[in-house]
Amino acid sequence: MKEDPRLIATRQTALDAAQKILMDEGVLHVTHGSVSKATGISRSTLYRHWPDARSLRDAAFRRIATPPNIPPKTDGPLRSDLRWLLGVLMGALNDTPWGQIAPQVVAAASNDAEARLVITEFMKDRFASVEAVFAAAIGRGEITADVPVDQLIELAVAAPYFRKLIRHEALDEDWLDQHVDLLCSIAKTNSGH
Amino acid sequence: MKEDPRLIATRQTALDAAQKILMDEGVLHVTHGSVSKATGISRSTLYRHWPDARSLRDAAFRRIATPPNIPPKTDGPLRSDLRWLLGVLMGALNDTPWGQIAPQVVAAASNDAEARLVITEFMKDRFASVEAVFAAAIGRGEITADVPVDQLIELAVAAPYFRKLIRHEALDEDWLDQHVDLLCSIAKTNSGH
DNA sequence: TCTACTATGCAACAAAATGTTCTATAGGAG
DNA sequence: CTCCTATAGAACATTTTGTTGCATAGTAGA
Image 1 (cartoon, chains in turn yellow, orange, blue, purple):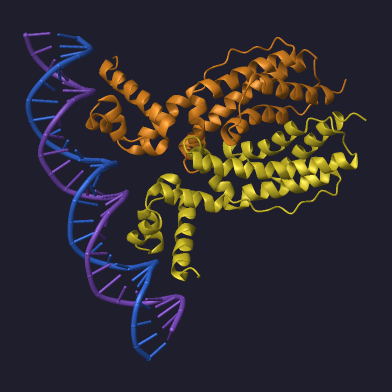
Image 2 (spheres, chains in turn yellow, red, orange, blue; image 1 turned 90 degrees about the vertical axis):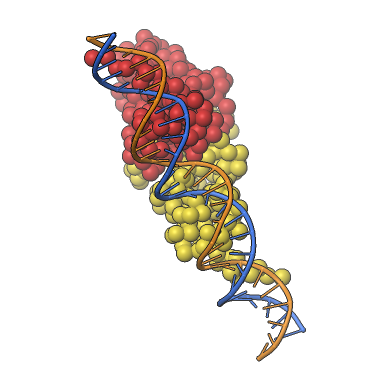
């Protein structure tokens, strides 16, 4: 029993538009009315799909916040793995809808359990990737297990997010190089061989 | 020529309520109507003060985002100064309206130049405080000038913000101790005496 | 192709939120 | 006491939001 293609088409068209509005104008402007105007889909149809404004907005959030799965690179050396992984992460912040949408999700999360779930799940995923890189480095003996890995992971991810979402500063290659250098130097100097 | 006390009283009462609504229910619910209902101030009066929803919300943002000026402590040692300063910062995030409002400002900033200005000014202020601490440590000769101060400042501030706003993890004394320890160890090991 | 099903568009509508304007009143300044 | 002005309140227009009924057209299955 397949789903009616009209349902799928409507959902996709509507959420595409909702996503764009969310990015360009903010969550305040994501409404059945604005999506209808942007897509040509009639308001009544939109109401049939998403009974209220809240569910429409949630759907728009969810659609964007699904983490792209990052092909792991953990063959070392640490600096190279880390640089590559954070490069992907930085690229996502710079060039994908996620970078533009994340601020809205952050705000929504402060008084919406649903949005909070979206973002914590997303972050859990990111952290796991970074952790894998450090774990591999420990496995290779490149650093020892007594480096404060949890703190390093947090700093590794926090810096680009903070810089982008809160400071609105550029995330470029030079900055990332410095960031990775610092992380590695911490890892190395705390490594007790 | 003093200002009519009624103007002041109305503004204060209204923005108090707007602030509370902003924190409890999110920016979506800050409207002339909701503030009127919360305060008893008539809608027409509110419209006279803030002609549209946008200006009302901006006013609410601005009111909360004014940085409390932090009495500087730069008499050393570095660890102690840093611990104290970040403690104040962490306290603000945990226990003042700013901590609850910041996510909303972050979101607003992504498509509102006004809000972006609010937050970048705020951050500039924070960074200056942290920088003063490092500068003093350099002045005392506790660390040398070749430590990557700018990166350290960013990490120092980024971590608590990221943890609170994005991860929704606890900011407690234990965490802060670890954080300051790590920052100091970076500063020390990069210090070339 | 014929039939049953259902998603859509559209119009009409109700309800609520959003702005606007006017007037009477009451508080504040000199 | 008098002038000035901020407020409350009501009346109003406008827009947004949500609902419903119906005709149309796309879809699936026989």
